[in-house]
Length: 96
Image (tube, rainbow, N blue to C red):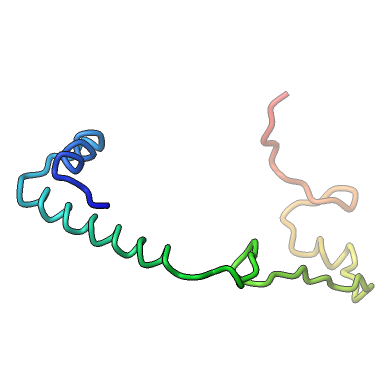
């Protein structure tokens, strides 16, 4: 199968591309070469290859939940600009 000049012109019109004749001829050659590569690929026997859903094997990585060192409230609030009742005080961003 090859692409005709009229098909290239039609596709260029649909894509709103303004191509001159030399660009149309060049594009026709490139598209025909691409179709040739697809024909080569279709000729490959893949009957013995197991289908996969992803190119790379993926697995979830699960980490153990373990209690570690705890940051105490006083240490967390130490560098805060403003605190009240053991909490951070921040500017209001949602109006009433």
